[in-house]
Image (cartoon, rainbow, N blue to C red; front, side, top):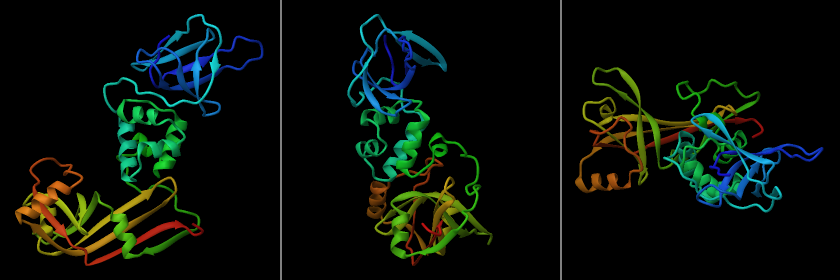
Length: 305
């Protein structure tokens, strides 16, 4: 019997009156995939160390097709103590793993702390982030709860749909956010929207990848682009976050003068400290800074929240 992380272990229970049991293999103790395994049981959501017996078989997922292998004849089908899983082989991270890793880092959570809160072994979380895994719905629900997001978001669902399509709260509360909380919500980097007047006098709002360095909003663009029109004028910069599942969210608006950064040492420092690069690609090496003169924000929560 050999297994991979993510395979399903099924115990048929040959004795009279026994119940069939199944679970996800979340830990390997041998590189060749031989037993024992760490199994998260579907009925209890607990992880135990399992030495499969003759009443056990494994459902593999190879190219989307289930393949079954049976355990050799051996006494017992025991489930002993909980144990952390080990790493498994794989070609690289999948989309779900990348989203989990991004959300975890965004909240400054270590793998160990995230795994503890999500009630899973750190080794399995490492596998999930680094390999093209297919976690169970229960695993995704726990991770989404810990990371403050939704299962749909972790799966990438609704990527092409506009935000805010959910139902309004029954008793919403709209409150202002103070300047200090606004600074915290701006965080260190992300995607925000800048409102500018284009050279032809028309208003425009465009998204940019930004960082906050020394209290200043900075982003990279190219000359003669719409974001570059911000230079030399007062602009508005907006960041928001919405929780579709709970119909709540917040927005922060920064208003202030925008200028281009040209001093070589300052440009070098910004390049060293920046967390992200512009998503549109290369050729955007013009640094623009916005020094907020005014910070305002609003948050929607339940009236009793």
